[in-house]
Length: 290
Length: 287
Image (tube, rainbow over all chains, first blue to last red; front, side, top):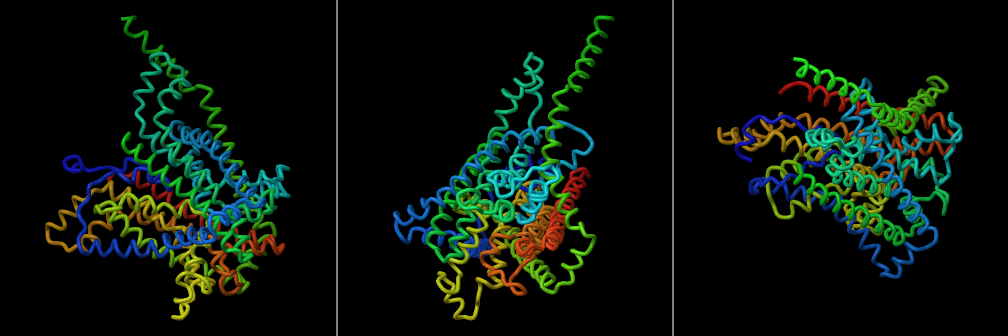
């Protein structure tokens, strides 16, 4: 961070929501002063009061009844079926997102055509649209009055559709900046040596994109597993059929069964934590490569 | 002479063939169709359903004191959440980029946690700590006269929780991009830390902050699950706009539900549009 930074730098990376992939470059930084130390103290205090202590309370409450109570709470047939549906659907959706997200990122970066800006705009919509509105949005095309004649309302397919909608931006927005920074020379060399376009993509481009795709996939999985709002009106929340984990937790809260609610919530939290760690590791790998 | 000129047109021909490759159109078509059926058409239909009976439904929403109250409440809660997250977010970003301290990596990773926690879990977590009856701190706070859960402070907290990383995600890359030479120059010329922040740092990161604020506002206005758990959902007291959408739909007032959803979607779409247009302009103009 000395001589190189004296030259004016330009915003080379696109700053898009969800593309915070490059933000944690290991910069040395200065030591804390009194004022900044105080600021850090206040920030950590607020973060603890708002996020950490409440989330710890979930884990503590879940463990209050001991291991057997926890296990019983998450293995009742209805809860187990909700967790199974949520995790399976989120996995399938993640696979679709890996393929479609990479494809969309590829077309947005490498293909130039009028109206590309509109596609960019469409990808960000699920990011900002309130989830309850997202449910209503999907219901109007894939619900009982569907102009296409496709009605997924109250069927397991509605969960798949809702997850697909809300997780759309993640893989696209993590892959896009990496793809646009990618050096084309290696691809051109491969092509000039007689490699087909598909081989070039598989052997040259895909390995460079893998960490970004994996990070996007992890985020998309976490978002899918924790989804609630878009399903409220769409899935009908039928026990053992379309009920997802978040709905199950809410039902337990409303029945004043807080321990059971906390137990299921702890499972979701564990998934979120694993994803956060995975993304952090992948981001570090990306930074080292970049 | 011929030896030199022949390869050029040939190359141009193969270039042309490469450029006209059919696979490219196929990919383009797949992407357009996918986004059309998943996003564009459904979103358009919500707009159309909201105006299925002309302006009747929208007028009904805007003249009913309960829904107007819900809209106002939503705006106030969102503004509070944005204010908190902006001050907190800019401060944290400065600390993360400009300083080193033990546990920085963990802290930085944990800051993203709110993005992947289920909103219902967020609500439950806040109830467990701040709930009036059995929460960890709730009974004490209530004995001081501060009711948090089933009240507006809890709704602000839930909203601030879910939108927490958005400002940080926008500001940190910009801070890294601009570097700290100008700040150091200002300090060496005798500016105080406060002056340096207002006169040098803030102008340099103003775009990042603005994008963060707009995205945070959109997210805060649209929060549903976490607010549903902590609000109590009392009409005219703690019912926000997103809760009205659900309530009206379940009460078979679909027109009202679509009209409210349309208003919320309008704000979200406007936010995305503002940010993407501003970004596009900013990346184009040379600095």
